[in-house]
Length: 148
Image (cartoon, rainbow, N blue to C red):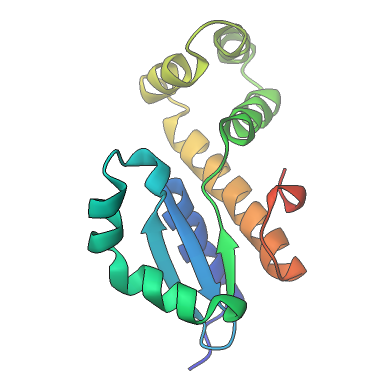
């Protein structure tokens, strides 16, 4: 059964947001999500735990499009875009200040989590991730040149 493209995009974006690299097989429409292994200290243990998924991707490498978790600068750009579109000048000013100082990710998260803009942020980030995934999917290959 063919899945709607929007469902595929949403699924991949959600996995990326959770810190997983995704592999999409355009022939079977299968999505294989594997945690970005740079986060793991014990690479051997990681490879053993995800051996089936890694093997599947390796065996059918040419059928898969890889979607990688965002780099820090890409996540930062999404935060900047969110702040730019805010109409509330008080929170906009506070967030601009946070982004210009030390620990922008931690402080941005703290400020957003304790504000009325929390849900707006999640929706905005989801939408931006979906745009990135859609661009990569349309181009048929993943990579930074197809991102923000």
